[in-house]
Length: 311
Image 1 (cartoon, rainbow, N blue to C red):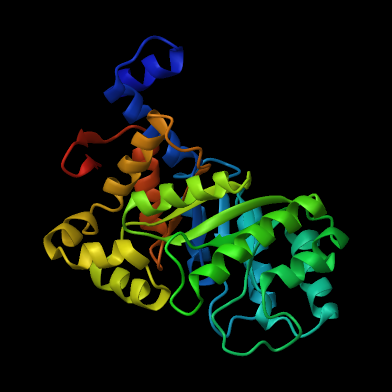
Image 2 (image 1 turned 180 degrees about the vertical axis):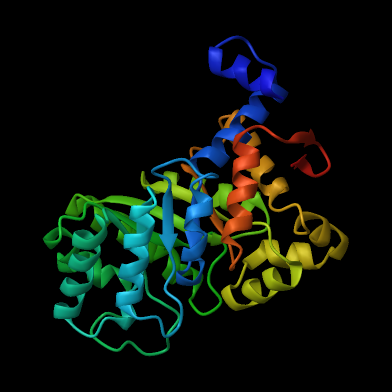
């Protein structure tokens, strides 16, 4: 496997299989990772596993305080990584809080990007019910932020009409362009690569040139994955997999998201999609996901047409 990677890097002719292995490894090297405030204790270990400067997205758990998120940003930056905090806009009570929270991130941890989400809260505590309102407010620019991520939903959302989601995607892309913001769509995790690739194609057909990153579930217990999938809504691919329990168990057992990684790598090899990369959701298993990424990035896997590859 190492020789395959070396040939690809040297520019020598490689076979499709060799190209596929190289792309899989590159996807792992470039992947961003989710971390929550309870995983901060694993940052020291992760320095051995992840390259310096990797983007770590810091989730905002229920009842989490903004000060906790800021402290996590500081810890991530101190460990040599790039913190990208989640900002659920429905938890922001007023403009003053927006400025205080964002300036805290920027000044305390050199944050240069945030992930704006509405947040699954039935009622907003302030004037912001959707991400687009904050994007239009100028709050990001006041703090010198020029990069922003927003949630992407290739298969829809369990509580929002698909037509509304698709319209909001176009509105966010337009708002970012008008404001001079570099936009990334970061998706909810999915179970099949085809709906994601189709969605990327639809965005491009609509003139959206923003970066698009596919969210994948890192190595985790099947029961944990199902719990989060039911909560978030995984769309058509979830229905397909739950209709085939054997395939579902094989794909999401102890070996992690190999099949999805492989499917996306094949699309990139074939030039079938220009998605920007992948992101791992860890569900409390941050250290395990880092170990998995390091193994794949180092080429310590064997291609397997049935399972994608085996780490």
